[in-house]
Length: 259
Image (cartoon, rainbow, N blue to C red; front, side):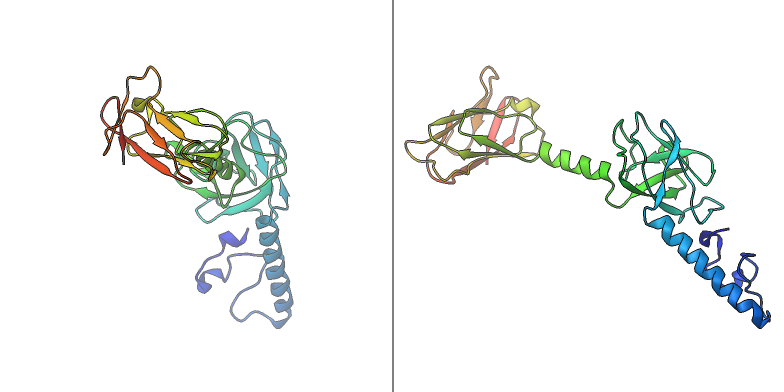
């Protein structure tokens, strides 16, 4: 019997937990027992939520034994524990001997191999409908795997720093910053048909050194057959002043649109 088996309605707790006397008209000598019981339940729940528990099990089958001894697994049941090993495939989790269920990340996806980190604290909650519509244990909070995915996505679609060299733009670039410039440089655009629709591409001088002699020339990628369309109708664009930038977006086939 755990706190999660109690009723949120006071009247439903008269005989909800045999370890805590709560009957109407109970003897005064039973009050100390009730108080001690409440203290024990509160301590158990606190320990179960603070990462003090260590996972057990073998391979990708993880087990956790709580201090609360959870009964029915239902929405609202949650536990925090420290993982004792990494995973090699999608993990499953059993809490207090309950039926093993998939353990998924905060986005609702199955953990990839190596996502579960030994020594990391994971907070999970039982959900009624996970992958395939089946119950699952879903990670919540700032789970390491989710943070890692967010960081990876930000890097993939983020800021690319170029240090004093020519650069070939990748389809995953969002902003290309020429951070060091000691000679004229050339930036070749990615094949426009590989670039995400609706995604802006910014190319900028971030060195402050761009000038009439230290230029940044932006051109369609060699062999792509692409052209640059825009106000000037130029086949190439030359940046020639400090901190100048230009923004593009994918247009029709083989067309970069300068915005």
